[in-house]
Length: 260
Image 1 (cartoon, helix red, strand yellow):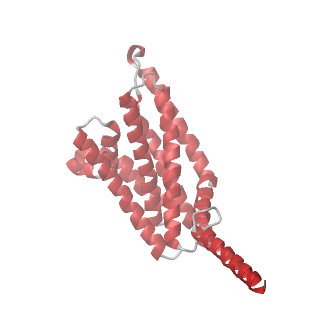
Image 2 (cartoon, rainbow, N blue to C red; image 1 turned 120 degrees about the vertical axis):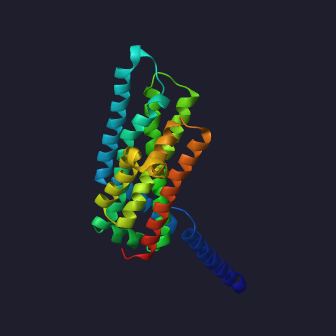
Image 3 (cartoon, rainbow, N blue to C red; image 1 turned 30 degrees about the vertical axis):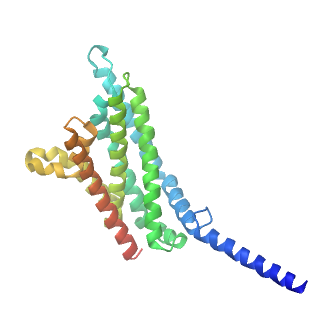
């Protein structure tokens, strides 16, 4: 009997310890990964500037669609693929601002220290931030693009493809701005740099020539419009994603190696 009780107590303690180990090492809400993801998500959705940015961005998208209705020749029905470049030009500014706000908030207040208190492992913090920003960006882009596609009188496969390319580009813009923000550690600096790369450089095609095609803004335009050859559109998409990946990687490296 005594041996049975000792074995029972030992087995129960081992089981409890194993359960605690699994709980701390897994991805549940109480695990380090769960806390990191939840903390980053809460920051992303509770920043006041994010809600104002979302409202202005949505209004800009609606304005472009309404303008397309007014300028439609003879009331001719149009699809999203026809207005996607102009629509994206207006909406992408909001995604630039959102990325800059999220990254800048980490270094303009004590929020960066709070993030490290919640998630002291910087590599985990960087990964959680990337996952959350990607998810939030995709969700916001999908919602806005879906409204834009639905608001257009004509629905087609071309419109859906244009919508899909636009979602990818808007999410890339958000991550690009956030990565730059982590590098320069300033919301203003990130916004200015991202706006130059995304919005201004395509306007300098006359000066920069074909070199402008290697910059994210022009590559994004080619990708969203989808009017070039298939190879050129794919190449443009890869260029845009390469810029985003580079900014994200450098920003994450600085977060991991630099002081908060």
